[in-house]
Length: 395
Image (cartoon, rainbow, N blue to C red; front, side):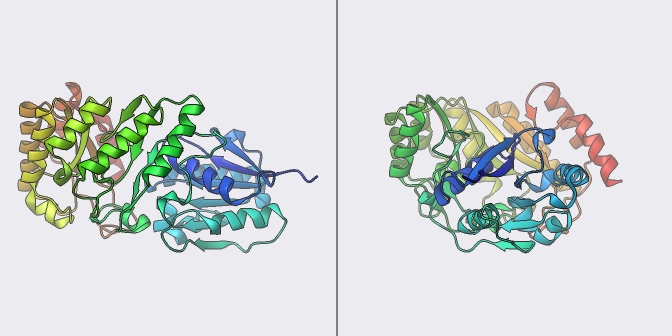
């Protein structure tokens, strides 16, 4: 009997959910003895055999390029590597130029599985770009493989209707929300509980949008059904509306927050606000107002949760007045509502309307606020040393 074809999947902290989904696709589409999946957590663990699968975000492209160059130096022309994920889908030509033999765009499915099958069965495939077609129902594949090789957070909604100008998500998954059914969720968690898992978090563009038609506003009945189904299936520790997802300001209601208190282990709720300037919010096509964001933070705090609020610094075209409004708003949220700020620096991501934009510089008062909040443990995601490194890169 021929030896199973090795398929090595590069696994790191940032792509665990993606690799779990890829394993699920392969498990569903291919005969069980055709391939030998291997999880590669250290670059030296890859032995050059079979197919190497990499999935990475744009923020990790430099690291991915460096790793690929090292593998090419070790294995030469026998290296067979494919890249997919957010960055590859947004910039397939650039990703191919890094040295990958194939680049897969869009959502993994039958096209990716067919490539693996062809290689495993000895058929030649020309290098190039594999374009995935369509947007399959989220129930098409389980969120992780039934074999239990990799347990991950459960994606309950895919697709984001808002299309913020800085974000790759709607360009990768489309703007029409697709929700995982309650039946799929029940099966998923019954299997999880049977294999010893008692904890879960959810993945969605807006965690409070599950089951709603637009995924922007909330449907409390759908959220309650999600949480009770998860609990009944045997999951004891449930987190909704926090890492790795966030909630949309207009979806936050007292009724929904009470559901989270009743069913979940959350002590915090993560909310995307991004700027304190109405002009900036309009420019980035955010789709909500500053006032709606503040109202959501207030409701979260009044319900007894710590609001964790996302802000992005350095949007293109920000004025001194815009930055002052953001600083004033952050101070208000921290002082009056006990918020913690999760800070990001704007990065022009390929495939987005702001792909070619130049980040604006951070002024002294903004730097001082970041340093002050980080020192008092009211800010995560950035610190002063990271700002210095970014300045060095931009100079």
